[in-house]
Length: 376
Image (tube, rainbow, N blue to C red; front, side, top):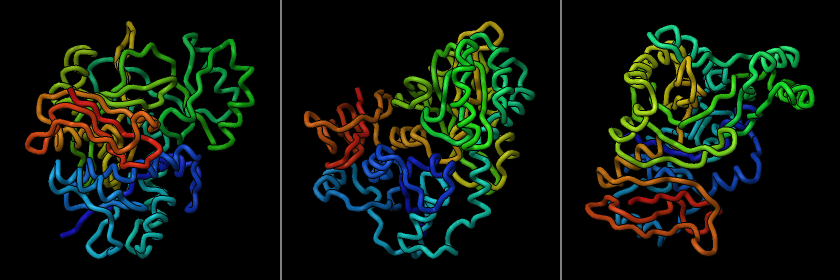
């Protein structure tokens, strides 16, 4: 039986921009990765395994006693093991080579470059255009790609409400800048630097946001399937801060209530053939980030960005279905561990291997960050 070998690599979007096998992420991103080594315990199949530098044995036994069989640390036997990183890049492939996999058993450069090009934000703009053309109602226009400051300035001046500029490859709110007509000239050197680093910049109007959410999909052998919903929170300009944990039905109803009747379901279904046409050779999970906004012409931004990788939305969706008592509700968020509440805490009421209430850290003791679940 084949098992997946999961590797939590949250800096993958940054590694795509760098495009180096030996990419060194910022210190905080490295701390996040090391803290989240045990995250696959909570979203992978029980027969799968995960890459780690070591697992706290007492903590692992405690989790097993509460929830039964769970994924296990990689035993360095690549036989019948299929690599499954958070996302593919030259750097994530190198991690599997370092773990003992022959390069012949891993995606080649052509496929990795294919995923990199899909992950460029112009793909989201392309999907947004195709989606808008297929819908019987109005949605936000697609972002535009600009390669020179003069073109960026023209776009900013045409949108008095302000504009958000985005690097083609970035993650969790990084590489996003707010610009308005009054300040665009003062930001010229910064904007030109962004274009110089990645060749272009994506620009879209700034909206009055009501809520962030995502639709979760998987593509396998050219077929796209819908997985579930993600209702999440952001800080500043798009920086991820946490997810709502609830049943798929509850998340659907709460997101649908933010939009005109029928629009969520229409977009969910319309995206499937579009994603199949745009990414026919991609294999793996993906998330389409969206927003509900205040507006007279439309209230739906159905393609803010597309993450061709695992997302925290997928983690929360799978965690809820596997470990939470149906009908319960809670929250997930990431925060630095503290002396008052050190990483690895487990304080939950569990019945039949499902959480009824309480608080749990998905990270193990000694981690810099805590991946906190609160139920009830």
